[in-house]
Length: 169
Image (cartoon, rainbow, N blue to C red; front, side, top):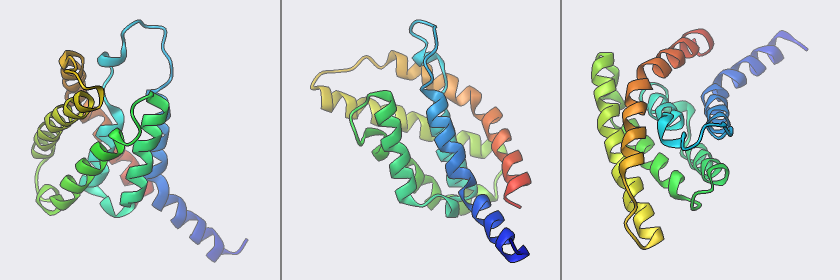
């Protein structure tokens, strides 16, 4: 291969890195664990990834990719098709629209934004599941997962920042 061909491959890999990372996180988040009722304990790593890339590199995450990631999440998680897509698209669109605001702020402000967005996700998810099932869904597990998610966000954001620094120069 010529140098120009390798440069094109290198550029393509860099451009799809966020998408590949999120797909890996979707699959990892659905690996069965031998811990009973562990679902609400683990943070929503896919939501964290969607938020991070919407803040820092929305140009690398087209809407159709976010939609497909949501469908994959629903298929692997056994949820109603389209619920995760709707939630992830709402998050991505809302955050990407505010990217200029977030880019000039400290990590604390970005994290505070995630806390607000995460609360909105819990309420939207609860509302959609209540509508789909036709009865009120207990919100306790979702609130507990929300707390673990906001607590874990700094670590995952740091890992994504390192990836962005090393791969997406």
